[in-house]
Length: 215
Image (tube, rainbow, N blue to C red):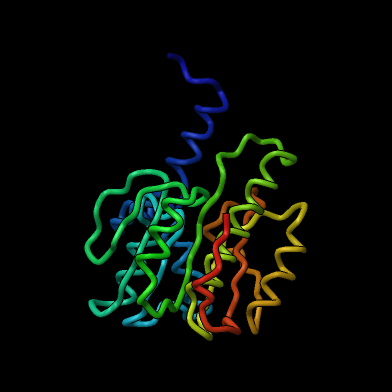
């Protein structure tokens, strides 16, 4: 089947992308690895020996960065609706984070752990129509935020992908209620035309509320 002009242009841009080339050279599974590297370079979130939960982990680019930074004493628990090839030091759960069973499985896996950091690069399949895409994106951010409330230890941290648009100010306020400091950051590795950025909650204010269930 012949590719459309837009598909051909996307493929060319992808192949020519600086961060795609750098990811291939470094052995990373995704150019997104450099986003987390930038975030960690600025905010120093990935401490050796930490426990990290990675939401929307496939194909594993962020997990690779996390395991390198955490060292042998660290622990990474990852979840995605898509399959992910195994990575040493990563416990992977395949499932839809918006459904009860995977959500409960992830809660069970973290029930006896002091979670230092939750990282979420989750995003919906984009249709190109903001009135559809933005609510889906905001919902995933809210789920990540409420999950973090249940598992993050006091003074733990949260990183979530967001898209500028309707509802984002409400999300910022929710972050402010749960974290001592809330910052916004757009890595250089994010494509310039994209509206994506990352909200970073520093210093979770409370002990984990594991008895709360979010449907």
